[in-house]
Amino acid sequence: MTDNIALRTYIIVDRMQPQYSSITGTVVKGDVCLPGMSQLYIEVEPGSEVYRMLDIAVKSTNAKPGFQIVEREYGEIELHSNSIEEVTQAGEAILNEYGLRINDRIKPRIISEQVITNIDALQAQLINRDNRLGSILVPGETVYVCEVEPAAYISIIVNEAEKNSDIKIINFDPVGRYGRMYVSGTESNIRTVKEVVKSVLDRIEGRD
Image 1 (cartoon, rainbow, N blue to C red):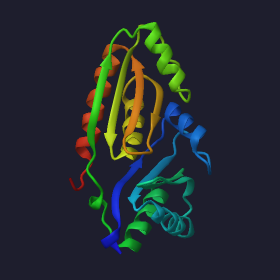
Image 2: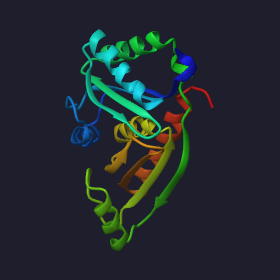
Image 3: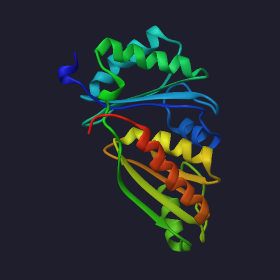
Image 4: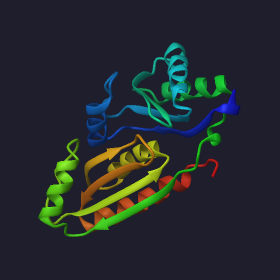
């Protein structure tokens, strides 16, 4: 089964934070996730394989699906539950069916990261117009923009950043070629976020 399947992302997000879950809830097409829940993200190539993967998960566990997305290159599913055990079981059911292991996933890497201090009102306005899902960026704040590959790993980064620092989530996108996040706060907050990002990514094992 694994010859034609490339596991790009496999990640469990534990204890969804209020901002993170609220933004996620505005974009999911299926069951709405709430603060405190846990999530499973799986991203694969070829993309259409997510239909079978989601079928396995919902028929063998009580985890609820938020979305199944098929793009030009990749497919991605999200499942969530009040119980981390249920999303873990959903992931294990999929891996077992395909003869895959967690470490068959791709190890994430940062593609780009930028810190903009004391952001100008004009640039803040442009970012706000492009990103309408989260908080409003206020002139004078410090902004952190990060891109990672594969895309879905951005979700755990955003959630852990909210757990560990007093930030605002402007937006994030876990779908596509790269995952991207925009968060703002004080310079001290953003320094903490950068440390969190590095720590989270360093803990995720996988293939290069």
